[in-house]
Structure formats: structure tokens, C-alpha cells
Length: 205
Image (cartoon, rainbow, N blue to C red; front, side, top):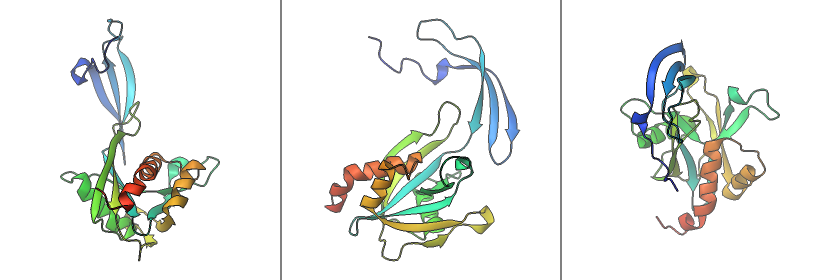
């Protein structure tokens, strides 16, 4: 049987590329071809590509109190569905040039929830929607105390309006199972917490 990953970046040939939209985000149109698994070349085809930088997301967790902090805010992409467009999410932000994901985690922790992480545990990196977007998420669990957590945050000049909530970990995990939390970063992070919670509470790295 053929092994996976036989092709690489250099096997894709881009015949033409142009920017078709430039606003808060950018959209490019590409004309490209690449090898097929049967040995033939794919005819030149077009795709639109959403150009969006990488981002960092953090699940704030207090292992002593067994509580998490989740942020509630309006998300345009959830409008028009059979749910509230105010979602419960992680601390998150776009990676700026010269910043490490850990730098972004600490910056956004302060801006969005008034939190400083004493430790950041890497969960994973994942591509958000590789069929049409360049965005990669760097996902962490951030260790905090929830003693004084919660409240209203956000950068007003960025039109952010954020309510930080403190939940028992068990309740937050239940919300991914009942569908109340349905965004990818929060689901992945809370499932990771479900698997690693006992280890973290025992103080194991």
C-alpha cells in the first residue's frame, strides 16, 4: 500500500495568482495544478483562498478550583443560525509580526480577561479550514487562579465587547457534549482538558 504524504509543497504549481479582495481580510484567486494519486497531472483549476494570519487560543484553567474561564462575545459568522450569535469561546487573538504564540497568549489574556498565565501547556496546532483558508491555530491551556476572574473586557477601539465567565470544569465540558459550545478551538481544548484534568489536578506536568 502507498504511504501517505508522498507529495510536498513543491509539487504544487501555481500558474497565476491575483488578489480579488483587500479589506479587513484578503482574498486571492489562484490558478494551479498538482499531481494526482493515479500519476496524471490535475488540469489547471481555480480556487479562492482566504488569507488570514495565524492565531493563538488559550483555555484558562485553575487546577486547584477545577474551574475554567470562557469568554462570551458576538460573532457575525454565527448570525442567522438556530442559536445565539453570542458564543462562549477561549481567550484568542491574531499573531502579530515578531510575536511568538506564547506572547500572544499573555497579551490576549490581559486584554480579554485580565488574566496572566503562570504556565502554558501546548495542546496542538491545527489548520482551521484548509480547503479555503490559510489560518493556523496555536492552542494552549493556560494556568491561572480564578479567584478574582470574570467581568467585562475588550478593546473598545477594536469593537470588542467581552464578558468573561467562570465555570466549573465539569459544567464547561458538559456544554460541548450538549452542543452549547460549538466552536472548534473551545471544543478541542475542553476535550483535551477532559482527558488531562486528573493529571493536571495531581500537579503532574
